[in-house]
Amino acid sequence: MKEPVFIIAEAGVNHNGSVTLAKKLIDQAVYAGVDAVKFQTWKTELLITKEAKLAKYQEHNIDSDISTQFEMAKALELTYENFRELKTYCVQKEILFLSTPDEEESAKFLLELQDIFKIGSGELNNLPLLRLIGSFGKKVILSTGMSDIGQIENALDVLIEAGMVKENITILHANTEYPTPMCDVNLKAMQTIENTFKINVGYSDHTLGIEVPIAAVAMGARVIEKHFTLDKNMDGPDHIASLDPTELKLMVIAIRNIELALGDGIKKVTKSERPNIEVIRKSIVARCEIKKGELLTVSNLTVKRAKHGACPMSWDSFIGSYSKKDYEEDELI
View 1: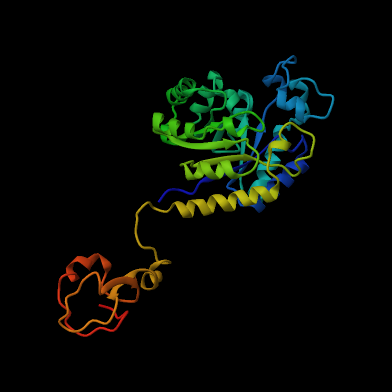
View 2: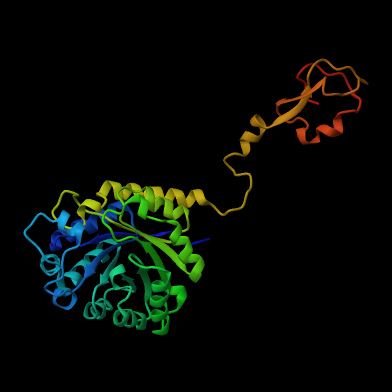
């Protein structure tokens, strides 16, 4: 039997630079029943030039006077000591801590905190970082927003050449627009990735609502990542495209139900429906009164719901034979 779908609640930067808010996000992830809660770790000076512009969605979602990515990242940055504190808190709350490193120094730091490394879509073409994380020998989850199959293949080659075993890599289909328009989701691309590379796949979702990640599970996703927040109205780049805690819990419940519903693929009579056979399946019965020795025909036999009669699939063996006894109308043959 397959392992359950691994559900990551992406806290990301929705802590707004506050450890207190980050802990509240962890609490809500526990409430929702996810497998892991994930943050993002970086040192702004190592990540972004001072002139780097905000993405359009970031401009739209930030209410403050921040005008560059550097300013935004600096306002949202947590220290390494903050992350050690969050890791300890996750251990206390019995939920897996994860964080995505956005540059090499933070990747090395996170080695002491986690055994799974999520590589964000923005780092898909970052050869030095890919090579470094590939050398760790840990499990890797690779997001592929803003990429095509050739670029995914290049990143995969770097990880494997650095020492990764392909079985320890999961590739996430993703779109990096917040929120992603439904017309750009292209869930079938996830299956293309799976078929092309013969690798575990999943989906990192930035759409509004919960229906797309649920559909992704039905289509074979082994990992689901979804942003969540304490309040969608908070100031910050990702809150508006995130789930609130109740929605996150509903998504988890729905995914677990879909996993159950997918089953093992063997077509068989289930335990729950077995009692219905006696009351729903039909039997051969007398259409009218039949005398012993009378020829059985389509005129005096019919098929109706009835308990424990002859199966209608044996119809041809009765037609043209002779009745061995008298029958009342509707009596089982």
